[in-house]
Image (cartoon, rainbow, N blue to C red; front, side, top):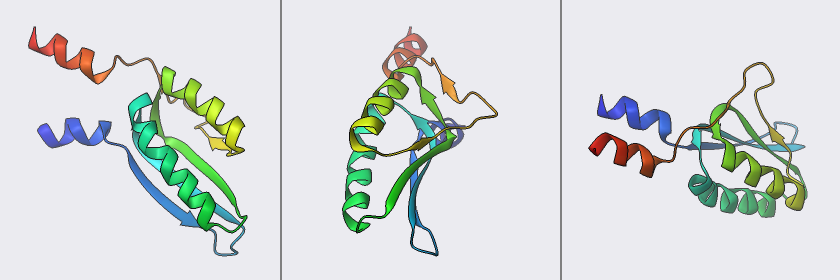
Amino acid sequence: MKGSALASDKLSVVVRVDVDGEQIQIEATGRVTALSLQGLYPVVQRTKGLGGGLGVEMDLSQATIDEDALKQLQVYAELHEVPVRLNPDHNNVTALPSRGLQTTSRAA
């Protein structure tokens, strides 16, 4: 029970380089929050630095994204020219309460 509840909220990141060497993809799964973005941004910047001018894309199509995180992502993507892929078939943007609110409501 403990592992399954935490696993779905944990953000997991994999960096993939296209075989042709034209594209680098940063794929994230789990839950993207405003807080977890603070850990994702440095990964994107390091990847862009190592890529030698290759295109870098964030693939969040398998992740659940909080609304406030989506707003931050939109600004970040524009400023740093990093495309962000979301799931076009299913709305993976959610308005879940923050972890702090969930913990407080469970304790009450």
